[in-house]
Length: 127
Image (cartoon, rainbow, N blue to C red):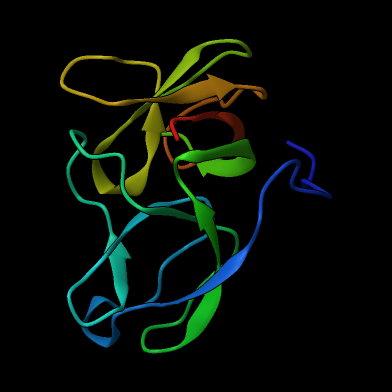
C-alpha cells in the first residue's frame, strides 16, 4: 500500500504513551488513563479515545486524533479487508470488518491483505 500523504478532516493533538506500556505504533486505537497517558485499547468492545498518527515511544508525546471526531486516518487491520467494508474495533487497538462484539468505527477506504497491514479508515463522527 502506498504511504498516506495526508490525513483528511482530522485535528491532531499530542498524547503521551504510558511508560510501562512501551512504544505504541501508528494507526492504533488508544485509551486515556487516569494519569493522563494513553495505552493501546485492548478490548474490541471499546472505541478508544484516540487513533495514533505515528509511532509514540513509551513515556513520550506523539500525534493522535480523536477516535470519535470523523476524518480519514491510517489504521492497522486485524484481518484482510476490502475498500468500502465497514470498519469495527478489534483487539489490540486494531480495526476489522467483523462486527461481533465490536464498535462501529467507520468504513475502510483502502484494502489490507491481512493482519498487521496499514490501511485507511474514514471515521464516523459520533459527536
